[in-house]
Image (cartoon, rainbow, N blue to C red; front, side):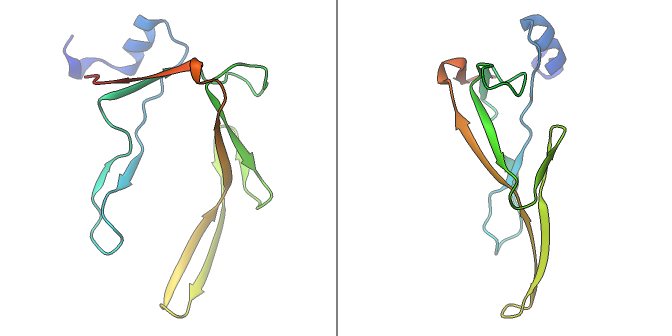
Length: 121
């Protein structure tokens, strides 16, 4: 099988893993004054292998947890974080501001539960 033909499902089966997550987040690498230049947030030659939480039980060992504070009105619905959307005018700049609030705090708990592999192709 050629490299381009290997899928996450194939790797999951071959490595006998419960789940594979392919990071596909993007970012704008230009500053706000320039046209957007979209790039991957994660390097393509790195792979993280680790144990993630399979339940909400804090006794379940895992690499880390994402703690959420809902005092601002945001909430978790299933596996999605629903933020509070606010819109207001900024008269000094004559702009409409749209802000999404959600308070989260990622914490590494057991670093021995994961490994970052570099130079992967």
